[in-house]
Image (cartoon, rainbow, N blue to C red; front, side, top):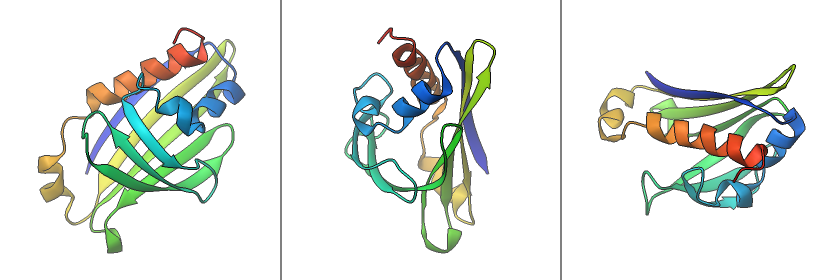
Length: 140
């Protein structure tokens, strides 16, 4: 198992942050490390995501948990759970804005083998969290 995470305090409401997290066009503006998203980010939805980390490769994902405006998961991988990645977005209200947390956990029988070819995602997670904060606070 391997995981990555990033966290930010954001000076915006949970609803404002959620609106950004579910707007494929906003997420693919380039400031978050995502270059393109096809599909709709909604309960039971399916999307294809392209990132700067792996240009030319699309990741087919399904929206698993969808609990506006607090929690959502994007899930992808191989059949039978041989390899699975689950990215969880959490938005928690605070006195002054929200705490945003993004975490991805990779599991499965083939995870040790496949993860050898997966680049370190730490920097891309930090970029996403910082970019989301800037967008939500109006500093894009």
